[in-house]
Length: 211
Figure 1: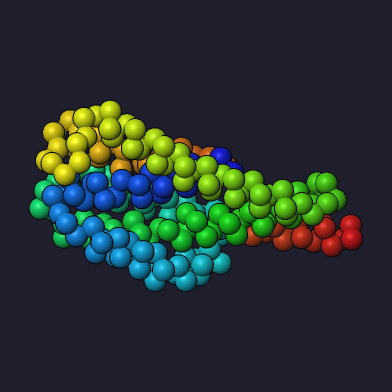
Figure 2: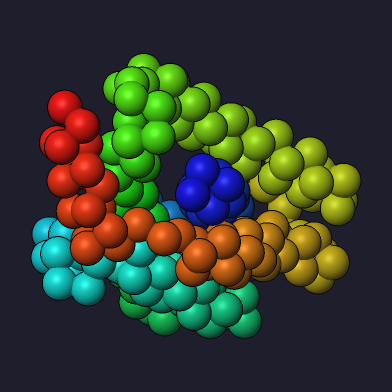
C-alpha cells in the first residue's frame, strides 16, 4: 500500500510542478490561475462523494476508480494543444475530482493497516506509520520538482519564449505521461490490497478478543 501511495503521490506532485508550464507553452494560454482553481474546487466539491462511495464499494475499489479516472483524463490531456483551453478546463475538473480518492482514501486505509499491525504484533505503532507516511509524502513532493525541472531544462526549455516541438513533447510526457505510468503501476499494486470492510471487521474483532 505504501508503494502504491508513493507512486500516486509522485504522479500528483509531478503534474502540479508542471501545470503552469503546460498551460503557458503547450496550450498557449495565460489562464493557469483559472485552471488551478477549477482543479482545486473540483477536488473539494467531490470529496464527500468519494467518501460516500468508499462506504458503499470499499476503500480499495474507490481508490482504484479514482486512479483510473485520473489516468483517463491524463490520456486526453496528452493530446491537447494551443487553443484547447476550454477542453482542458473540463479535464481539469475531471482529474481534480480524483484528488479525494488518491489522497484522502489511502490515508483512511492506513488506519486499517495499523489495526492489522496491532493484530500481528500486539502493539499500536501509529507513530511509526504516520512518520513513514509523512516522509513519503514529502519525498514525493521533492521528487516531483527534482525530476521535472531538470529534465525540462535539459530538453531545451527557455523561459518566456515559444518552445520547440521537442520541448513541448517533453512537457507532455512529464506532465501527463509519467504520472499515467505511475498510476497504472500503483493500480496494479493496489489491486492486491487485501483489507476490505469484512476483513477489517474480522481484524477489529480479533483485537477485541485478545484485549
